[in-house]
Structure formats: C-alpha cells, structure tokens
Image 1 (tube, rainbow, N blue to C red):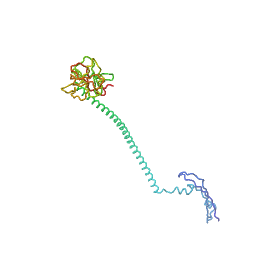
Image 2: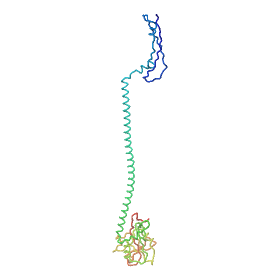
Image 3: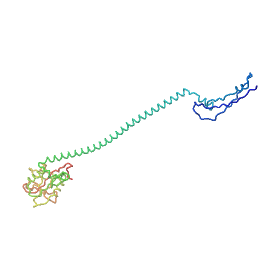
Image 4: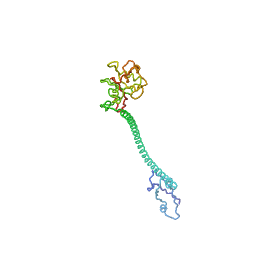
Length: 317
C-alpha cells in the first residue's frame, strides 16, 4: 500500500515566562509526515489514527537565533571587569568627594586668614596714622618745652618781672608779646624811649631800666644807631639828649655790660667834654650824635633788653 501523507501545522509562540520581546509576524511551518503502512492487516482506521498528529504548540522565541543568543551565558571575565569598573567608579567618586571636602575646608580657612589679614592690615595702617599724629604731637610738645625753657631762662635773668606788661587775656586765651607794652622791637631787642616827666640822672635812669630786667641802650652797629636816631626827638634845649649805657671807668669808656667801647658815634672828641656819662642826641648826621655830659644832669633815657620768645601757643597772632 502506498505511504500516506499527513500535514500538520506547527505554530511557534513566545514563552510566557520570558521577557516580552517585540512580536514578529508568526511563522507558519508545514511539516511533512510520512506514515508507513503496517504489515499487519490493520484496519485503515488504525492506520489513520496513527498518522493523525496533534498540533504541537512550542513556546519559544520568534527565531532560533534569538533563543540561542538569550541562552548564551555571561563569561566570568566580563563579570570581573564589571565589578572592577564599579569599584573604580566608587573609588573615583569617593576621591572626588574627599577632594571637594578638603578644598572646602581649606578654602574656608584661607578665606578666614585672608579676612583676618585684611583686618590686621587696616588696623596696622590706622596705627601707623596714629603714630604719625603722635610723632607730630611729640615734636610740637618738644618744641614748646624748649621754648618754655628759653623763656624761663630769660625771666630768671630779670630781677624784676611783671607778667601783665607782656601778656593779656583775650577770647582766644592768654596772648603774649615779645616786648612789654610801649616798648619797640628791633631785631632781637626791645627798646623803651622814655619821654615823660620827670627826667633822671644817668644812675637813676640805669636803675629804672633794671626794674624791667633791661639796661641802658648799648649801641654797637650803624643799623642800631640809625634805629635809635629815628625814635628820638629834640626837647627843651640843644644840650639835652637821651642817656645810653656808656660811661667812663678810669680812662676807659665801658658799657653797662662791662664790654669796652670799640666803635663810636661821637659828635666831637669826648676829651673836650667834662662829663663821664654819654647821651645820644637827635641828629641829622647818624655817625655823629654822642656827647659826654655830667652824670648828674637830668635827661630822658633809652632802655634795651632781649625779646622774650614765648611758646607758640602763647604768642600773640
């Protein structure tokens, strides 16, 4: 008997336990099944039953290639590399975190140090400015101290000193002048031209000057002689003048300071006179104005003394 052919339709569906993958169009495979005829006299129904095949449903992937690939095991080397890379990434992250923390800490310290340095620098600049002010103040006080010592020295040289003839109280405080009231300053000296009454002899005139810590004028230069001549005027008669501090001691003309006469401004030779004391006469000739007179003659006189240099804060403006 001829072999019978049976056709069976096999449909491959994806396994429900596997991950879903995009479904492709189902493949239909037709399988050809050859059925041999039994040697026994089996009824045709039995042969027909044997050649009857149930449809088999295989659960698989859409293609044998994908199934093979999914079933490929991961190699140990690949696993080790993955673990190593993971550890490396973790270590890098840890290092970066540590560096960030280190940077933050040290930047905070640096900013604090910088702020402290800026503050100390500003303080130092302020201290330098204060020091400069203090140095100026110290120099000013030192100058005042030296001036006070000089002033005190001049005052102590005077046997008679009246503060009120030098200093006056004003709205700006006490103000002092280098020369007493009614005295005239010329260079480093103060001069008083007595023009009131009564007149005095030479000795009494000298004592009057001493009460102010002064002396009868000592004339030792043409400039000083010119200054004195400008402030003297004629009075009473042509024989009266102004006593100066020159007198005859023995045969020598001596100033009240004890210094000997060197330069002179005589009107005529003093040997022709009859006096031992000298007076300055108002004259149009500056180089000839001295005359010798009797010391008991009553005249006006000229006092001279050094100026007083007061400390700056007391000087009159």
